[in-house]
Length: 228
Image (cartoon, rainbow, N blue to C red; front, top):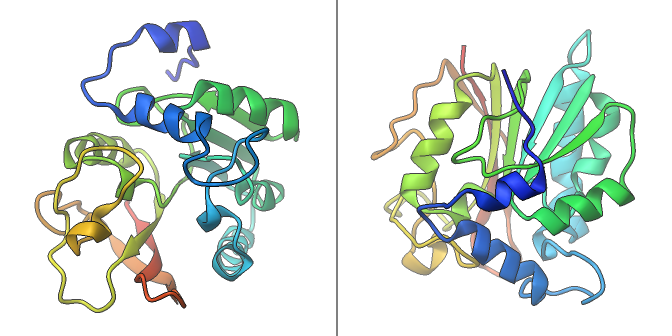
């Protein structure tokens, strides 16, 4: 059974990695930009050229079901993207590791089928659902954490993962990093859950979107995995 812990309980858990502290610092110091008076998940969550195509393909996927499905958004951030998907679901569970961000989102976004949770997705039990969404989340965390997260994704029928990758297919995937603001691009690498050391098993794989960034910093790819 999924148990939604209170913020105080969440704070008491000691993590073996720095993700929570790193993400809290990012929002507290506006390291991803934005107005210091609000939470801001970076240009990747606000640039129309990046988010509009993503929202379109996700809405198309969600509307393809005869009956709306339940979605678990793992790493929901400031919810600028997720808010466009809620109406196409039966239930939408939005999860993030930053306590104050979740409190902020709860006050700003209100739908009958929407619920926010403060959880560490590498450690805590996740809400049950049909589909898990991880949009540019894995790229920020260590391989150890990714492995922990992947063990939890087998409970979903569908998993949609978006990652910022180097241009071309000649890079070595999954070079390890310390969790934080940076991603694997600085090592000319990116996350591929099907490659070593993860070797995540899926039933089907389908690329939903590939967006070459105009600044030449790589490509943002969104992939749908059917797990069972």
